[in-house]
Image (cartoon, rainbow, N blue to C red; front, side, top):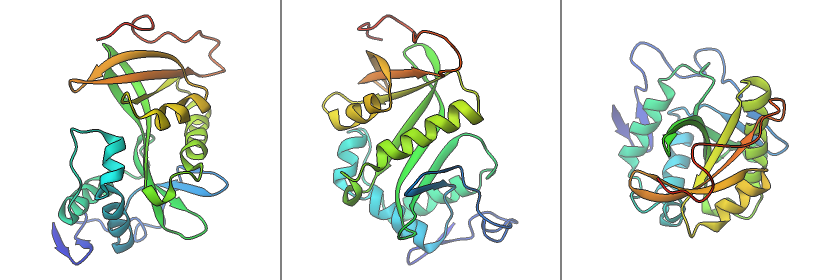
Length: 212
């Protein structure tokens, strides 16, 4: 991988960008946002670097992570862009319709936590986009996608104690069953929501309040 300014090339040996392969798939579309795969375009690299080099953003992600360099942004997007764009779960970019800029990243992917195999919904947004309701909007879209398209039985969200803004968003999404868990030796609060079509009561791993 070679970086030139804010551009990474080549992003996949023998392939090409998503645009060159006939267009970029949309994972989820909401009123103001589009969830789609990351690319190694100059704009995506610049936007990812702007988001993940921001110390304010990392204060919400967790103390075990450090701010991102431009080379790390290139490497990460190259790895993500090399994945099959038709993958049903993964880490994706969140594009603002009004500007075409990437304002955040989201994930819907497997996570083993608290002794159980779960599907986690997560999000990181540029600090300039905080307070715009984007996390709730895209979270609702991802829940519909997970339940209606993928037929998942349940989806979880986690946040670190003290990051009550994220906890508030997860509760607004309808997540319940809050309990304490440990992940990568750090404490987290876990909330979950079941597929309304499943008719199941929420119960994930241990009873509420039990720590792992």
